[in-house]
Amino acid sequence: MSENVLERLASGKRLPILFVGSGISKRYLYRYPNWEELLELSFKKYNSDLYQLQKYRESFSRSGLSAFEINTKVATIIENDFNAAFFDRKIKLNIGSNKNPNWVRKGISPFKMYLASYFKKMNLYHRKDLDIELAKFKSLKSKVSAVITTNYDLFLEKEVFPNDYSVFVNQSDLFGADSYNIAEIYKIHGSATDADSIVITEQDYEKFNASRKLIIAKMLTLFAESPIIFMGYSFTDENIQNIIVDFLGCLSAKQLKDIREHFIFISYEKGQQNLNEIQRTITTSSGVDIPITEICTDNYGLVFDILNKITPGISPVKIRETKRVIKTIVDTSITSTDAESVIVGIDDLNQIDLTTKPLAVAIGYKENILNKFGYGLIDDEIIIEDILYDNKHLNPDSMCVDRFKSLSKTRLLPVFKYVKGATKSPADDSKLKTYIDLHNSYDKIVAKNTTKTIKNVPVFDDFTELIASMDNMADINKKAGLLLKNIQSLSTFQIREACKNIFSLDRDAAVKSTHFKRCVMYLDLIENYSKEKSQ
Image (cartoon, rainbow, N blue to C red; front, side):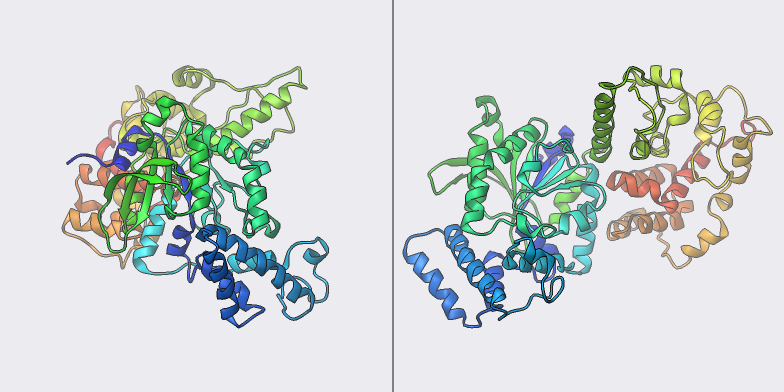
């Protein structure tokens, strides 16, 4: 069976850009309105007679306007009438102080304040299958280069990529000093966090279109490294069509030749549990043809499963932080005559104090840098990955002498692979020797208090059933807890495969999970522990 376009993308290891529309928010947020429903809700705040709203729509429709043009004109009318009703004190918004809110004095549209408040209050639509699907979506934070969205709501930054991706609301910020083109969310139609930024009326779209080239330039910058996946959009969305047409017009003939492999639409098809791939061409209202690959499905969990197979060498969040630190170092070096080397693990980049001393960056082959500066900078994630994949080729002696020399007895970290490979056994008075003595059996790795926490976790006789049950869990620590409860009945191959599955799903969450780290420690124990070697 041939691979679909998403599988080919995953095997290519290029991090995609997600272009996210309202259909995604509508899938996961409770009672999320489409554009027409949002305008109706706004209209009803000041006029209960919906016939009047329909009168506008009918008039514009008879004039031959498109659905997009009708909505922008209706939004313009509603903003004018809504604001008038507010200032005439016919309606209240209860946003800020009742008498004279600060936002009124700043000249912000009451209509847009209402929209911002409405979208801020939106909650998740909880259903077991959607909760599992959303957990898979969240795990894409290390598999996605950047996100572009036209949604006002806070779903992406609060629920999917919380605390990980930087958010940019205004088009003027797209090429600002704080943008690094990775691990970022670009809200090109504004956000509920800034009512004034919301794009919805005719005038708003005129301003948006006047500066649309900024968005195209950003897309071109991102597209140079990443394919684009559209989710939650309709092919009839005129605004998106215009952006795509402008974007395609800037591509070279070579880029256009392979555009179907790099321009993917995920379309909602109710009840479709497979990924139905279609090669199609969209013809815009202006007669321009857009070649795309469409995936029709109602199984977004399967889409996320495939994208989660992408294995970047380093997560986008850490790449962005590295770029930030290096930029700061370069900026600082302009005014400094001295430079000093600082050793720091990539997970600790955000903790560097760049104000107290000038810094220098060392770039080179891993072994050369490690040999020069020591193994003390290797973080837990690298060690865990090495245990699972045996791909880091770390020097056992250096690991035991440098990395584990100050190892706390309460840490959860696999060490036996390196102790086994070292030329000398740990010294009797070393912290590593103490650590080994406290973690050289299952009962010591999985202590009584941990056993109590997984007491009611089910036991499985069949490995396939165990994996299926783990797949149905959204929480990484719970997945690992289920594996830990059953781990003694599994082979080393089965333990490794289950651990890889968890680790590839969400590396950051896995490294933070105590259950997961105990699973990896147990795998290391049964594979590498030698009583004689550890004496």
